[in-house]
Amino acid sequence: MLTQGVFALLTITGSAWVIAGQVNIAVTSNFDFTAEELKREFESQTEHTVILNPGPSNQHFNRIVEGASFDIFLSDDVNRAEVLERTTNIPAGSRFTYAMGRLVLWSVNSRSLGPRVLQEKDFMLLAVTDPRLSPYGRAAEEFLQALNLWEDLQEQLVIGKNIGETYHFAISGDVDMALIPFSQIIYGDFMQAGSYWPIPENFYAPIVQQGVLLTANPAAIEFLQFMLGPSGKQIISSNGFHVP
Image (cartoon, rainbow, N blue to C red; front, side, top):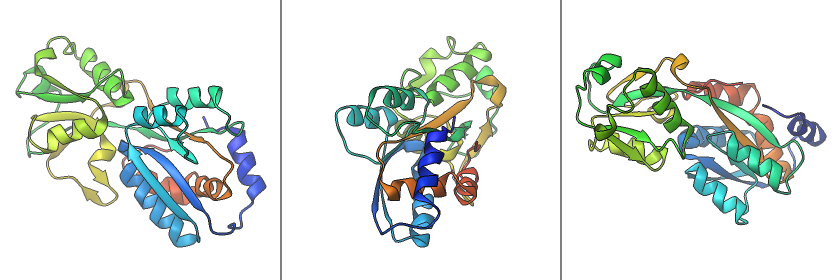
């Protein structure tokens, strides 16, 4: 969902860059590398400065509810953005979709990956993110349930509190494989070492990542104008996401 309210704010600001300002963004962990690339390109085109605060969406959400000051919140789900739009004093129509996530089965080691390795239990441990806290965890659960494996693999599952922890389990070798966002292993032209298998997207509900404009800061509005425009979408797409 990309509300007309965001576009109205962008239209009011206009296409000309405003006086140099600062944009303070709370960004979910699986989008931090993408946000860094967006920041570099945006700052190269304007006099604005972008401050990125990466971390788990649930932690950012709690901080915002408690009064933390950010101009933009880029969440990894829809629910948190909806709650903030409904319960906080933010510009009307400030919620927008900026990316759709993709799930992969990844191992830091080079090995054959696919449904068979799961069905034959050809591994010791598999990391997934807590389905109660992350849409990627819910997608992992939905995928394993579709294969009738969620219950069977309980003793081999390692549950990460957030996406970053799940990725750490895999890259450190603590687990054999992980079900993680594609964006965790692809950064533009760079692909993380190891092997991966894209999970067919019909196995899980769409992972819609939404953001919220929390202030009327003109520099923040211009950042969204860039991020949601053609150049920003190309950067987002190159980092493993679908774009709206």
